Image (cartoon, rainbow, N blue to C red):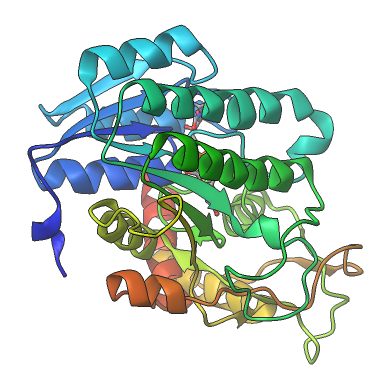
Amino acid sequence: MNHETLNKEKTYLITGAAGFVGYYLANKLLNYGCHVIGIDNVNDYYDITLKHTRLELLEQYEKFTYIKGDISDKGVVTRIFKEEEPEIVINLAAQAGVRYSIENPDAYIQSNILGFYNILEACRHYPVDHLVYASSSSVYGENKKVPFEESDFVDHPVSLYASTKKSNELMAHAYSHLYDIPATGLRFFTVYGPMGRPDMAYFAFTDKYFAGDEIKIFNNGDFENDLYRDFTYIDDIVIGIERLLSNPPVTEGAPHKVFNIGNNSPEKLMTFIESLEIALSDALGREVEFNKKFEPIKPGDVPATYASTEQLQQAVGFKPETSIQEGLKNFADWYVKYYEKK
Ligand SMILES: NC(=O)c1ccc[n+]([C@@H]2O[C@H](COP(=O)([O-])OP(=O)(O)OC[C@H]3O[C@@H](n4cnc5c(N)ncnc54)[C@H](O)[C@@H]3O)[C@@H](O)[C@H]2O)c1
């Protein structure tokens, strides 16, 4: 399958278009010549300069329409569906982050629950060909069996963020069942890449290095029994979404499915960090070594998390496979150029 299966005549609505994943997806669809409507409230959860940079790049395309708005505002969402008549909707707008949900629980209910409900209601009243929405690997909570499979028990979330994402899957299933809305939920596993999210570890470590600060690594300093994590390069995520867009679920019951999108090849945390040091050294032309402080494993951190990608592969014949060396090189090259580091 290739992008020729993407219907260029359709109108695509991307919520969270100024965000990391939203920007890359919008950019790809626009490159194919699709009409893309992007909505984003450009909140200041992280540096809004990055969000503006992404929007400026998207606004260079004639077929891009940007609407500054909040998906928790039902009037705004309804108006977009009524006036623009999107046929494919990709809901990426959400309050992300696990730790932030301790201090700011309201933001999660507002965007992830109320906002998503508004999207579902709009899909009910203005039928769409396919609703694709972001869930998260965090729904697996403290599950120990790896790789994580879509059929695993996921009723024990350990953060409000995770519980809003699991709720999204339940809400989507109900709406899909009641109103025949073809819907696909995607459980992303740690997405990284150039122009990514500054709140994520690889980006924050890089910021700290240039600020001359130490980085904290929560693995006991035990490299033999290091934590294993699945890191998924942004381009792979976008290919996965793109292929699913034109493949709404065909099932006997509610037309709703959930897929993991991860790398299925967990890396030791230390390998990831060393690869980042190497990538930054290459980008700068001098040796980079982080000032590392090893801390105890945090309560609730599981030894390994990674995705089974069998279902994704069966559905669309694709599984992410960009190596962390390649992905981090692209990130480091971008970072050094964008922030003019020497
Ligand atoms: N990046 C990852 O590793 C990862 C992992 C698991 C799940 N996810 C999910 O994937 C989606 C995209 O993540 P991302 O990394 O691009 O995050 P991001 O924060 O970069 O993008 C989300 C965008 O949505 C916007 N937004 C938030 N609330 C909004 C609202 N109420 N109305 C309108 N816009 C709003 C934000 O301004 C932001 O630009 C999110 O749903 C996130 O929870 C991401």
